[in-house]
Structure formats: C-alpha cells, structure tokens
Length: 264
Image (tube, rainbow, N blue to C red; front, side):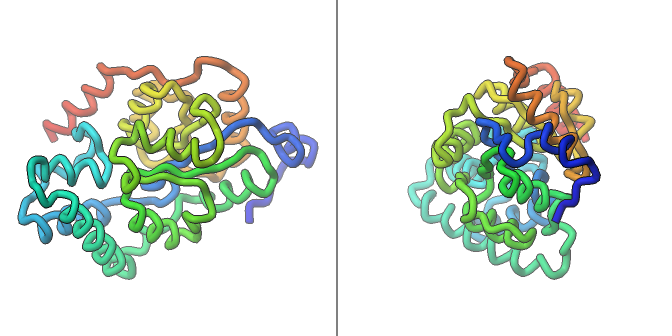
C-alpha cells in the first residue's frame, strides 16, 4: 500500500479524506495500468490469422484510424457476413494466447510502478471516483488487469466489446459511473488517447512509456509511472480547477507521428 512521505495536512491539501473532488478519473488499461509491450500485439495478430486466415498490415496502432480490438477486427472483416461470429472467435483465441504467453513474459502483464496503489488511494481517501475505459475486448482486459492485481468488475467500466470506437467507450464508462463527460479526467498513454480527448473535450494526464511523444502532442502533465502519487493528485486538482484543459486535437503533430511510423 502507498505510504505518503508528506505531513497529513499537506496530503489533505492534495485531496485526501473529506476533500473528494466532483471528478471521475477514467483509466485506460494497456500502457496506462498494465505495462503492456510487444506480446499483446503478437497474440492479437496471431489470433486474427488463425481465425480469418488474414494478416494485419502493421502492429503499429498509431497508424490505425480506430485502434481498438473490436474496431481493427471489424475493419479487416468489412463485408464479411460472418464478421460478428469471427470477431467473437478472435476474442476467444486472443484470450487463450495471452493466458499461454503470460508465464513466459510476466513483465508484459505487470502493472506500472505504483499503479495499483494509486488507484487504491483514490478510492480509499475518496479523492475522486474511478472508472476504466479500454480499447481491449472485455475478457482480455479482465485477464490483464487480474494479472496486475485489479478486478475490472470492481469499477464502472466499458470496453470495445461494448462499442468499437474509443470516443464512445469513454462516455459509456462515465455514464456507468454516474458522471457526465464534463467531469472526466482521462489517464492514457498513446497518441490516439490524445486525439479522442481532444474530440471529447476532456483533459488528459499522460502516463507510461510515451511521455516525450505525449509532450509533443501537447499534454502538459506526463508521468513515467505512478511513483510520485502526490504530484499526480496535484495535476488532477489543477485540471479540475482550471478550465479549458482538454488537449487540442493537434492534427499536424498526430500526422507526423503517423508519418514516422510509416517510414520506420
């Protein structure tokens, strides 16, 4: 469990017990809670190939228009009358492959430093409400979070098994938590998170391995992990009190990220 090094009064100023903000923190999963790396993409591609006989053109999700598990599969199967059944089969095979690979690559199924403790602190100290919105399938999200020590069913949540587009997944998670989208601060790690937060008009805190890229895309508050929990809570409070903190959809910067991906 997280142990603060600050005096009790200082921690209270950050939003401790009795200081609950009327805010919903929505967390992405891959790269934001779970330190997902190469194994997940390899398993997803293999599941698609085994079910459909088709191969994905790339594993670089930055060049996908809608990089969620459901959307990528549905796009690949566009026009196929058996698409829904095949996506269900892909989901099952994907989960089976993840379960098979987990013991071999435990680091890909571990949480970012401090992630579990940080989420527990938000709940225990009633700093703000928490929900999860993931572009994963529901079953694969549950498995990966379980590997991290988190039960998805303990939180209001939505996944691409509910709706394929991330711009719909986040509002659905908010609605299930009883909040309007205007009360949301999103925790994410990727360019597509920046893009959808700009579309939805919600502020974002960047977490994970892409912090320099997120800075380039205009995210002010970025952290490699959750080890400095007090600083992240300060960022939450600033995003709550200062209006118009949603990232602007910087089309030029996002296109540059995609261009570099194509040329690598």
